[in-house]
Image (tube, rainbow, N blue to C red; front, side, top):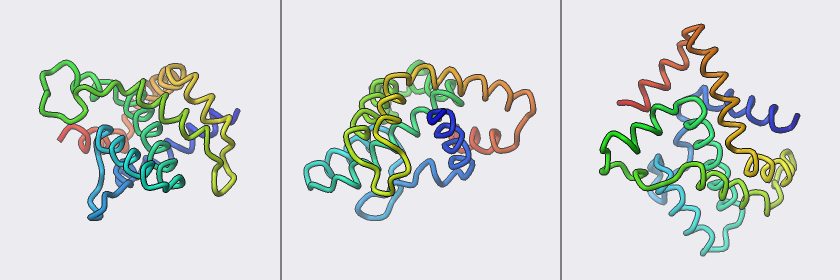
Length: 157
């Protein structure tokens, strides 16, 4: 039940397009690619900022789950259409997400809302969560949801 509730809340959170790039760099600019997020998490790891590192890894897991589940065509486009200039060209989203959720599982949630076991479950069952979001995407397509169209235009332009 916790996973279903978490993923449902994730969808509600990402209705707001600005949440896709909520992590900011040192200059306050949005960090939008997974490779840049991984770099940011690593730099916070070296600076002993465990809470920020956890937050970034959670975002990596959430973002890749959202993209792989609802927008698999975006992920395929990065890998298959010769977009070698895209920073995430060599990033395996599934491996990055599973690793990130696993790292989050080693930290306590400062607000105490999400237990570490939840993130270990998300890591272990990431592909199943992606498949579940694929079914959500089918329903959104069927209902021609305007939020889906807004997110698609943001990702593909």
